[in-house]
Amino acid sequence: MKKGLSALILAAGKGTRFKSDKIKVLHPLMGKSMLQWVVDSIQKLGPDRIHIVVGYQKDLVQESLTGQNIDFVFQKKQLGTAHAVLAAHAALKKEADRDLLIMNGDLPLIRGETLKPLLRNHREKGNSLTFLTTDLDDPTGFGRVMLSEDKIFRIIEEKDATPAQRKEKEINVGIYLFRIKDLLKGLSQVSNKNKKGEYYLTDMIEILSRNGRKVGKYKTRNTEEIVGVNDRYELARAIDVLRLRKIKSLTERGVTVYDPGSTWIDHDVKVGRDTVIYPSVILEGESVIGSHCTLYPYVHMIDTRVGKRVKLLSSSMIEQSVIQDDARVGPFTHLRPNTIIRQGAKVGNFVEMKNTDFGRHSKAGHLSYLGDADIQEDVNIGAGTITCNYDGARKSRTKIESGAFIGSGTELVAPVKIGKRAYVGAGSTITKDVSPEALAVSRSRQQEKPDWAKRKRKK
Ligand code: UD1
Ligand code: CA
Image (cartoon, rainbow, N blue to C red; front, side, top):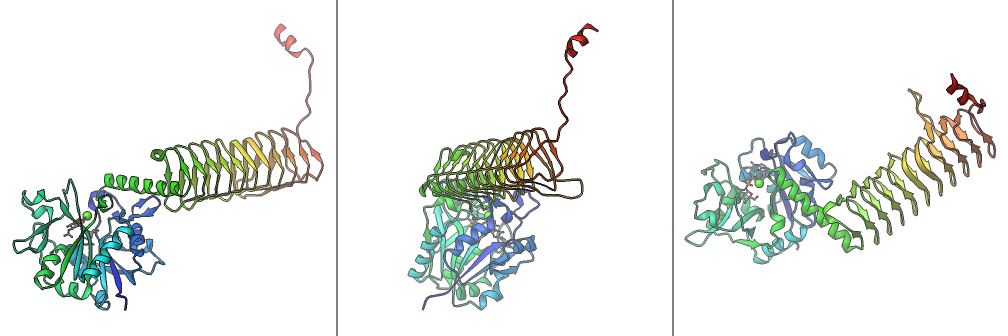
């Protein structure tokens, strides 16, 4: 029978060195909280249950993970990592025949691929406890892995270490696999007689060995992943690692990224093959971009779906919108939420749209505001067209039917409808519906006073 696996994440501490009003593990990295990264890596092992020890801002932490079938245990005071595990005692007792992965909540870079061999090793060796280690050139701050005189593993924390012990380069990562039965038996033997006055989970290594249990270590070479995030500079560096990891995975799927250094693509964004991304592009949230698109510099996109062969020209901001195949948007376009640019449409310089459906092959080339509008196919919107969609109290819609031509500098005072293939003369202020095939002009007639300028000069 397959042995069960549970996981326990330690996330009760505030993370004082972050100097934040928000608990450390809820800070985002590439669109995903630190804790969510840890949970997602653990999920790759297919655990039967995940427990999280919460304390500081526990309601916020729980809320951030709703709907993910996670068990939360509460540690009122943070008296050390062993004390945190003790908080889960009742829950773990019911799972005594399983293995338990224990992991600090501040290790967002750990991948499932690094956890898997640890679990395999633990089970192959039949260990009671296996802890993950690695060699670091600068081990400052970490617990050091030592052998006692009678050849038993132990961890000496930085604060408790002698200068000679501090030279040891093999460190304790903070990820452990326990046989739950043995863990629960040993926990009561942990004392807090150390420099910090805390109950150290790391003491379990020596305790289980002395109880005659089999304890082993597993060394990983993936040192980049084990760096804990303790302050905001480490956060910035972790973000950089995740950012480049994302870009690498996109390039492996056939996306061209010209300048990984200046490109930001959130974790959940999807990009199709043969799409080309120029420098300084930012793609956030749950954006999906199809194949053969080109994204020119300074495109900033949030939660947007883009079809195939779309061109997004420089310096465009696109939020919660849809852009269909073969459309062209930008430069300097702002698409606000709920906008659809349909197939083959063109939206150009200094055009803003909001909550607007812009039809197939329609064009709005320059300097326009189109809000709350339904614009059908093959419509031409002249430069400087403005939908007056807001009267100070209510928003109203503008409807423009297929093939209509809106002359430059037109104001469309909503609610208003322009019929099929109708024309609106340039500079009009349209307040009434225009019939299909008609021409509407609403501007005062031009007058001319001959020699007016000459007379003015003579005065
Ligand atoms: C711990 C290890 C150290 C290891 C390092 C790796 C111990 C005693 N030391 O040190 O050997 O090299 O991780 O990063 O375990 N937490 C609680 N409740 C508590 C205390 C801590 O939930 O009462 C949580 C924290 O929120 C944090 C994690 O446990 O996520 C680690 O605690 P921390 O105090 O940061 O341990 P380190 O000093 O980093
Ligand atoms: Ca830490």
